[in-house]
Length: 194
Image (cartoon, rainbow, N blue to C red; front, side):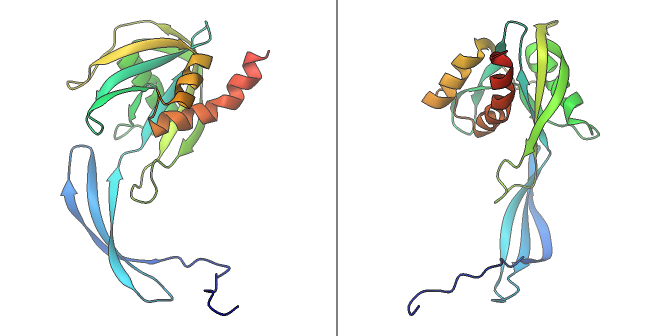
């Protein structure tokens, strides 16, 4: 049809060239990498954030409530309601073990029947890492939180249905938490009707 661009049936995989780290921080590195389109032969630098994998924990108590955390977030200059989670430390290879550690450190809660609900890419346009979503059931407070030097956390225990209401009404806005709730939904639906 005249005037319309042809839409190709297949996509081209850009060819990766050399790259260099242009900034290093405690949390991530910024890299510039040269990519060339194989058909158009255009080449340019693309910037990516290289960081550790993360883990987020859906922690369910025997009373069918979720363990949440509320903390100040510098990126939004405000408070955020989230699920416990954090960086998978160098040398940690099991996201479930890292999730159990993060849950204990941030909240003082521990549980059992931990399993991986899924792994997601936080922002594949510019980030190379994954966030693993771990479900831990039968969570109970067993100790005192062990926060990092910059952490100050309010622990919230809320009915699951209330948490989903907060997600739908914008009280919870953290995208990774919303992803975790999406992955948890089939489990919750199956077990809440039993």
